[in-house]
Amino acid sequence: MIKRISLLIAYVLAIYIVFPNNAYGMHIMEGFLPFNWAAFWWIAMIPFVIAGVRSIKKTVTLHPNLKMLLGMAGAFAFVLSAMKIPSVTGSCSHPTGVGLGTILFGPAAMTVLGMIVLIFQALLLAHGGITTLGANTFSMGIVGPFVSYGIYRGLKKLGAPQWLSIFMAATLGNLMTYVTTSIQLGLAFPAASGGVMASVLKFMSIFAFTQIPLAISEGLLTVMVFNILTTYSQKELQVLTAFTGKALTSFKRGVKA
Image 1 (tube, one colour):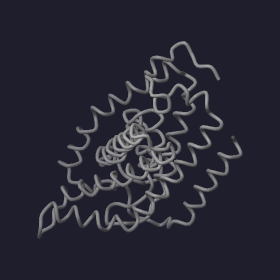
Image 2: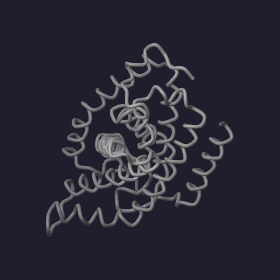
Image 3: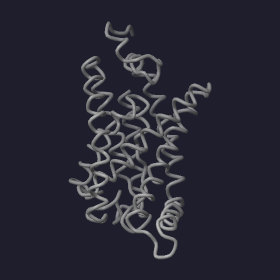
Image 4: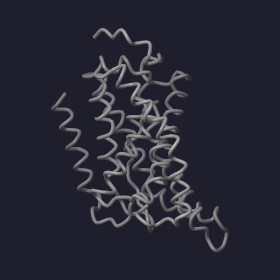
């Protein structure tokens, strides 16, 4: 498993080297949003963060052995979302990596992981910002995960193959993150002609050139990671609701390998 994970990390780093590294665009960079919009998105994210903290606390209390898998999901999101390609002034395109943790632990838990990832990136990589943390968390840590989870559960109920459900969940979750970012930028900076809608459509059209291929690539990579997990972490996956369809509380007595 270590060898496979090492190869995966090497693959991700290779992509990072190929992508331009001198990008000045970010999630939404520090100070880019007007104060009223920055404050609005901060307030909007708080209830989701509280729910996410409760979800994670419940999971690790019932199943302490899942802490490593939880950390891996956060690391996956950190590495992928750190790979940035300039797209529009004040922002950029990049994978999000939230689909993996969402399918494993649910969208609420991924909200907290996404916020932590964004804090570290803002402080250590100058990628994003603290004043724009609310907006970036709402798009990447709330909308992206909830869309991914809805797509995954919906396709599973329709009888879709596991790989297709995972691929579509990760891909569409990524795309909806950038639809949300476009809406956030459009609301903050309405066009002189056409207003908010014209501005949103402009941002979305520019994002599309880079984000669509990135979203597809993220979907494929997420399927690859799940294939590795299903081979080497079967015991941990058996206690996760995404794979069993049962609530975590039903596994209090443990799971056989």
